[in-house]
Length: 121
Image 1 (cartoon, helix red, strand yellow):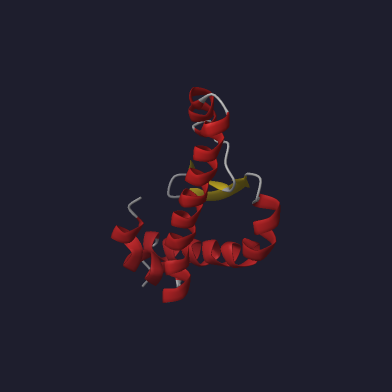
Image 2 (image 1 turned 90 degrees about the horizontal axis):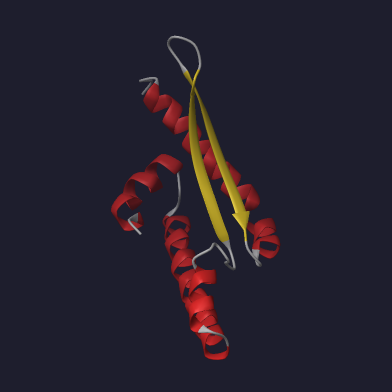
């Protein structure tokens, strides 16, 4: 993950506190650690090849798929669409706690991107 390389830019552009910015990296690391424990335990009881293939097929505890779509909109413009889809066994439990803040952070990022793209400092 290249997040540490862009941390200062993301933190500034999205208006994140140090705590919020650090939490993103921490959540990723914790999710990876939990997934490794679960997958390792399953491999002890099931065919390890099946577990390996299933773990690579998007079977996760909490996954997020982020998409940026840029659609031409006339001669001098584009429409920017940002989409996030959360899946996994823990998604229904985690989403109520992060949905509002995540949406607000995306809105701040969209405004900063628009300002930068349009050259309005």
